[in-house]
Amino acid sequence: MRVAVVGVQGDVEEHVLMTKKALKKLGIGGEVVATRRAGIVSKSDAVIIPGGESTTISKLIFLDGIADEIIELAESGKPVMGTCAGLILLSKYGDEQVEKTGTKLLGLIDIWVKRNAFGRQRESFQVKLDVKHVGSFDAVFIRAPAIKKVGENVEVLATLQDYVVAAKQNNVLGLAFHPELTNDTRIHEYFLKLNEF
Image (cartoon, rainbow, N blue to C red; front, side, top):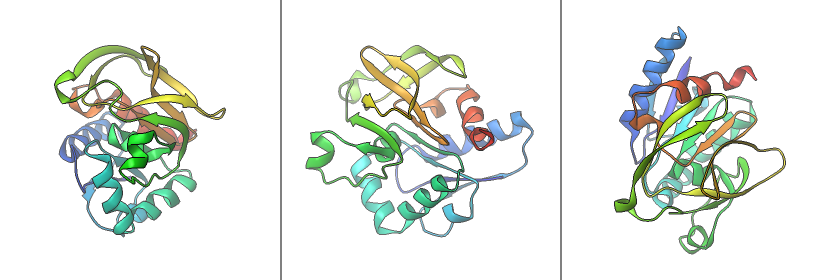
């Protein structure tokens, strides 16, 4: 199995390491490749869009042709995961901040997303979440977005306060938090198995 991590910006290395650990735990042979150019995602079995700055990541993936490859991969039923900024990019609808910055979205999950829903960087926090299909998980939120509303085909996996913070539509998984900043591989394992659904 080959997993691509979109490496244009953000916490790329942490996702690479966590995905390698998850593959090993599942007993799946494979490689994890960080990529900044087109041609890698299309040859992969799964893709991760990490956190970072959503406007910057959006500009670069659409400019470099990586966005089209992510959409094609998702439409072919292969697992796609976005964390933090990656969640924003996966969504169909953004808030006024997304519109103001001209951030192009991939539109792969039928959700309405709010940027910086939990405040600025200094308001980062860690909290125990009950994540459906995974269980209790120590979630790390850093300048996190959140989901304000979900479409009817979206499965809510976790909530916090009045927001949805993890959701799935078919083989596409969006998280407001950073599972790669923990030592817990369960969410990455769940993600890697999404093509079995």
